[in-house]
Length: 458
Ligand code: TYD
Ligand code: MG
Image (tube, rainbow, N blue to C red; front, side):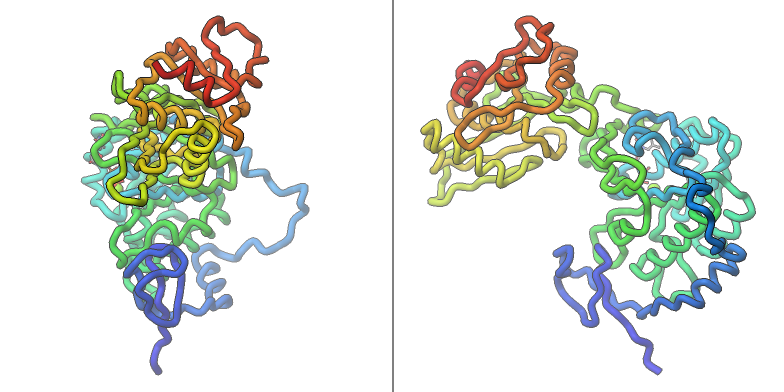
């Protein structure tokens, strides 16, 4: 009998009965791989889990008697991480840690293990990619090598891994990485969507039944042959992505899904000689490479979760050599940019129709806070007019279609950050000025873009 097969996108898990060049779901090219079709055989699945775990706890219990596991959090004492997680690792919670190869996933996982072990937890680190000796070397560098309570094994067979979990009975398991773990019951090769999903499902079940927390590492993959972490996002409780630019030592940890907390917190780290260090003042980091006396550079404020962060918005306005000017935006919403340009043209009479406009948010952060509108507008005018916005100035405000400046949320939090970092002038919406005025001459209220241009450009 011919085995049935299906084609799966290795980036997002989309399935199709025939091969496709481009995935209709995630739009990536050349990512379809033929895999044997696995029917969800409910009965045999349960049989397998029963064999692995013993009988399933299927007896209903009273709702009021259900233990609230969310309250049982293991603090990693890595403040940046605990905040992103919403207070620590939840008992029985499964975290997917995704990111490019070499970004620091193994490093932070070892550091987490070390911290948890120090606080008394028992851990199992499944070093599926690297030998235990390699991991030991890295642990030495991180000062984690002599940790009590960290067990380590180099194993890729999911059934054996589960045997070890049951034997060692750890509070936390790290799987590094899921893409090399495989189940011998499935004929497709390790790393394919079918394998990665099946193994992750099994791990999640173990986590839930035994109340074990897990960190599952997944590489973001460029080539199509290996399934990326996206195919697991719906299987786990929390999805964290580790981001950073190749040539910079800074790393951002971002939650894109969190059943136990918010998703708008970021953690900022720096890869140093002895592992990842926390960056306690992200504003300083985002502003660290700001050019002095350059036109088109403006500092603004965003709220990342509960934290105010100052960052630099850059604009480059250059005469277009073609009939149709280019608008590009990196880190700022493209449609919002077009709206701001339209307001500048229509309401203030700037002739931008023959200008290419490029916007960049420095530091690789993505801004999703309308309070940056005014900074974008000022950066454009600053570059267009070749006039510098003073070094000590921070700008915040949302722009309305009539070119009015609308108020921003959490203004005192933001202004405190401005003051803390030693800025001398804060241009902000007039409607926000009712905050207790103990900021002296720091605050400069404006109600239109024209007023802001007047105050900021020299
Ligand atoms: P790693 O954690 O192995 O990345 P991943 O698991 O995401 O593939 O990190 C590897 C990089 O980090 C490597 O380029 C070396 C660097 N590194 C440091 O700079 N300092 C350190 O203390 C460690 C452990 C790694
Ligand atoms: Mg690694």
